[in-house]
Structure formats: structure tokens, C-alpha cells
Length: 306
Image (tube, rainbow, N blue to C red; front, side, top):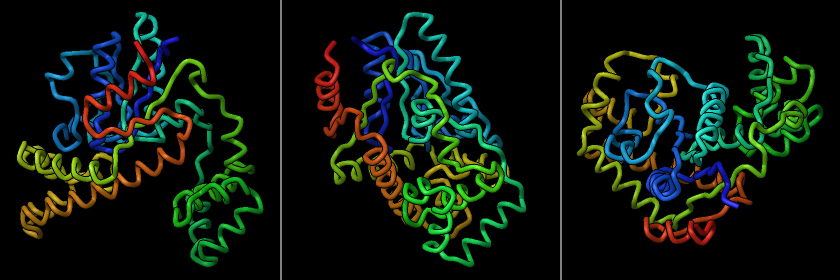
């Protein structure tokens, strides 16, 4: 039976948007954004947001809806998505969520725990403990009250290690226990997921070509008014791939060629991290390994015949 919700994930430049659009056209679907950068209206070129021509071919939701001064969290995205899913299903249509933000997919399929906010003192205490104990000692201490988190969190991920510590201090129980009690917002049988996982060399080449096209296609001019706003560099929109390098170019710190090369390198690194996340976190999703659009569509049809 055809699922009413499709999840299409994978690294940047892997072909997700094209596949989602083709699926929407073929099966009467509506597309929902699951990419944290494409939420923001300030950067359409640099975030590879669907073009007006593409959005005219099928309904698109949650693209370019936020101002760069806003900081959308996973929870805010989830709260925006759930009513949309109900509306689309009420119209008898298929919802297609597409993007590279793995945490969005995790929240949708596994749930998002209601976690109390740690105080400034608790955050400072966690940071101080990490500095004093080092990662190995901190992880061993964390394992005393949250062994699942200590085992699950990847080496070098200081942010998530200290987060687990802070949550225990604020809630009086383990982050892992809070998450385990959280019900998924969509039922397991209501959706299917596919991951685009093209060969690494082909993916990197696509990343490089895309950055070239962005630099030639208006990304530099597009970034100018956003950079002129002087927003907090820690805001999510200010971390868009390529924006830091364009800012350095505008300040005269990098040549155009150097800025492009640096943006390409950072994008390749990001794509590698995304591919690793999806490989580790979604092992039961269907895999599409072709690099070209036709090959990807054929593999998708093999996974889900019309």
C-alpha cells in the first residue's frame, strides 16, 4: 500500500529536491521542507531553495517562511509541520518531506521529548566539569546517571555530552529516559523513508558544481543585504554554507577564487557529515545510490512501484 507520507533525506546536492518534485507530480503530492536553512527567506540561491518555476509545479510548504533574525528550533519546525500533515491528508494527497536536517526527521518519527531548560549555572557547571575531567572522564561520569547517552554520543561531540549532563541536572533524570518515553508524532506504518546516498566522488563533484553555479547565479548579491543587517553570527541563518566565505570576500580578506574554494570545501565536509548521519541513524530506510536524476527515479520506483 502506498504510504501517505514520504520522507526523502540525504546530504546536500544529492538530488533530493528533484526527486521530491518528480514524486509529487507523479503521485499528486505536496512537498514540505525538512531543511533548516531553506526555512529562511533571506537566502534562496545560497540555500538552493526551490525556484518559482519548481514551486509552480507542485504545492510547496515551509520554504522561505522565516526571517534570518529568527531562530527556528526542531520543536518549532515540528509544531509547524504537524498541522500541515493533517491538512494535506485531509485533502487526500500524499505529503513528501524533503531535506537534509536529520534531527527534523528524527523528531517526526521518534518524537521530541519535553526537556526542561537548564539554568545558566547548570550550563556553566557542565562546561566546568568537561574542562576539568576531559572527554573520557566526563563521559565516564555521565555514564553513572545516563549510560545510554554516554554510549550513544559520538566521540568529540562535546555539545551533546554537556547537554545530557545539563538535562540531568535540570530534570533530575536522564535525557535518555525522557526521550524513551516520548511517542512519535506519526505512526510507524504511516510513512516510508528513502535516503539518497550517491557515490562520494560524484556527490563532491555535484557540491563543487553547485557552489560555482551559486557564485555565478546571484549568491554574492543575495548575501549583501543580509550581511549588512549585522545579525548575531550565532543565528542559524548566519551559518548557511558559503555565507561566511562570502562575508570574508566582501571584507577583502579572500579573493573570489579563494572564497569559492573554501565554500566548496566546507560544503563537501558538511555533505560527508550528513551522509554519515543518515547512514548511522536511518539504516532501515530505502537507499538510492544512483548519482543521476533518471537513475535515482528508477531506483525509487523499484522501492515503491506505482
